[in-house]
Length: 141
Image (cartoon, rainbow, N blue to C red):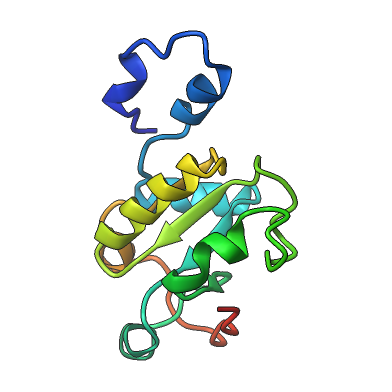
């Protein structure tokens, strides 16, 4: 996996900072598949238009970016049932990876320390010739 250079910096005596840094990297398409197989939540944050034009990610949960914090933070009052604790592994997918990297960093700041994203977004998924299609995932946003 690709380690974030920030992990090499001293994190002081704050154990939450050390724990958060342990997942501060982005995943390749193959690593994303491996994470999904081991139980990570694959969260598709692309627009409805993008999903219709580009295809669906099999097994992904579809959430609008505007509600991610509410839907993915445990005990928020509106979190999805799959989010049972701050230890849940979440892999975000946006169109090109830009939006998802920003959102993953924000989720880590809020305590979802295993939040990460697919580097290159959906375009890297397609470039890796991974499956697309199947039944459209229901929108949970």
